[in-house]
Length: 82
Image (tube, rainbow, N blue to C red):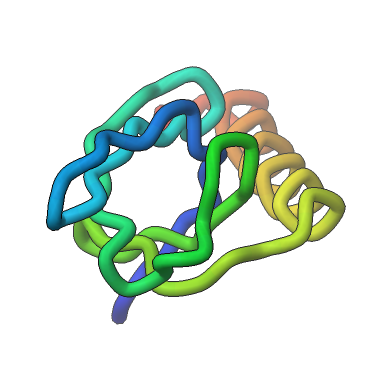
């Protein structure tokens, strides 16, 4: 199973790989924007194994992140560690 996660682009390095810092609910990671050259600071992107694979509108990104948070809270309520 593959998992792609939405994150917000915080900054973009001006280099051939178009590396960016992307925030995933406060956790930041270095991500390549090479496959999504139109992505810019403030945009939401879908990230899979360190590569942004598409842009995502802000509303859809926020709904997805809220769903993840709700699932994690549900697990905590049941005594499971997400």
